[in-house]
Image 1 (tube, one colour):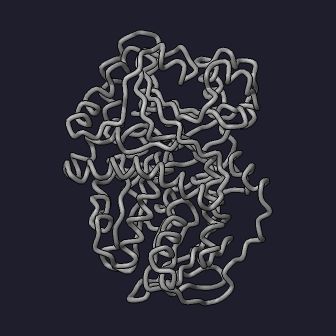
Image 2 (cartoon, one colour; image 1 turned 60 degrees about the vertical axis):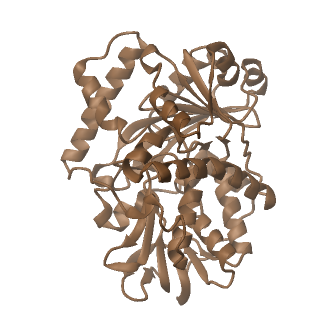
Image 3 (cartoon, one colour; image 1 turned 30 degrees about the vertical axis):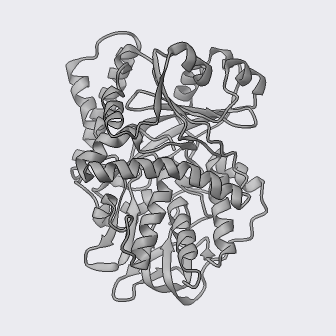
Length: 469
């Protein structure tokens, strides 16, 4: 169900050049299995691997419409971030005990992914060097105070305040006023990680059929996934398609909205990055709603992204999500602002991709109410690199019928709230987006934003910041 020519994000193209992938094996027959997973990205592959770890005898089949990782998993910014800064939202929806558990689990997931990559020799430039959240104008100062105070009260705060001078040695920029640092974070080359997960899944006996799209889902006691040239009958079907869910399953169309994140990566400039202090793998984010995020790579490049430009009408996939970014000027401007030393360093590539943003800014999982054999999970809202491991644990437990902390997780309650119907949603998104742009431009210039733009921005703040990983 591809919507575009086979343009690939720079990350993914580089990953494919480092391997000699087997030719895709589309499904050509009718088969049976225990668990059929639709989607070969982080969520689907973690689910498959975790099921096999728990029960090696389970027959697990993954179908992927293109190549494993060719969607968001291989195109995102590669920031390994946690749920800590969403602690207050977690409390609001799931209660304090579950909120604290999820924060701790998301921080532990960073190290679990690192250890898994080491164990299975997945060479993906994964560095657990922390994360720095910084304020780059006066309006952003104090933006984390309330949530950090709540984390302190619960004795789960991994964040330390840095002086601007200390932070600039991590951030590589002098353009900051305040910063907080946590060791429980890092960065990764996301496409190399997802391709590595696919290799490990195959080695464990997971059958993967790439170049195989789900055409329809026949529900019932044993649901059947129908593809172009075959079918998969399974005891459980897991829909792990993330931003594609609204296209495949219209019932979810109003539970998410699709928004782009635009990313650029420089040509190698290791000497310059070392000179300004970016000789590590920490992820850095500013305090905007449409956040700037960046990190260096081990081969001396700077990756920088900016969220919140393109919104899809009706949450349907659109061609521009799979084309070179038209906002290269914006990415270039951010590089020049934060790193004047890199003004003469060209961008090697600039691309974008879709993020499935929920009304809460948090992912959700569950069973189709009328067909409990069909499971789903999506809505990572821009922080899927780390959270997808948690998603895999949830879907593993649901698929195996386990009664544990993951099957009982607050995330398993399904979507919480819906966006307005079209055309109200898209029109509203444009009003909010443009208001945020004006507000943040005014704040960068040291001016007070208008009341209207401040009011419009509040509609987006509940769903968290724009995507970074």
